[in-house]
Length: 66
Image 1 (tube, rainbow, N blue to C red):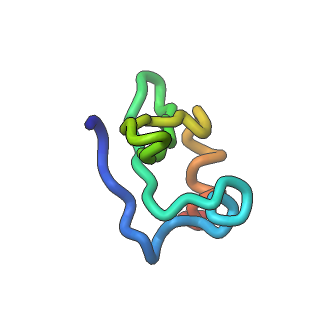
Image 2 (image 1 turned 60 degrees about the vertical axis):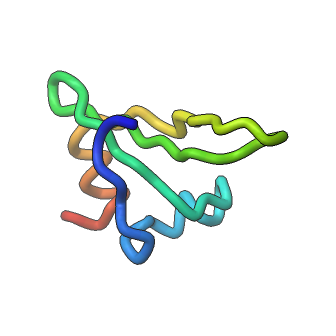
Image 3 (image 1 turned 180 degrees about the vertical axis):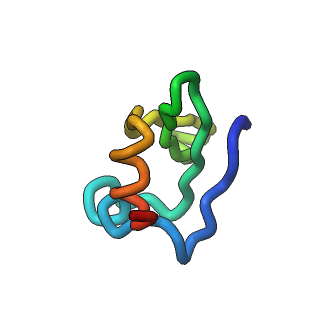
């Protein structure tokens, strides 16, 4: 795993309603971008799903930092 796990209480409702996630991780990318992904178990296999790649401004808005 890479990046930081986002605490459950800080997961934006957008991801819960759109993807039904209960865990979320962020990964810092070059030039201020952020990768947002989740980890799930599907048919007994652990998978990571990249949900979005966001620029820093969009990331701040999505997570309520600005």
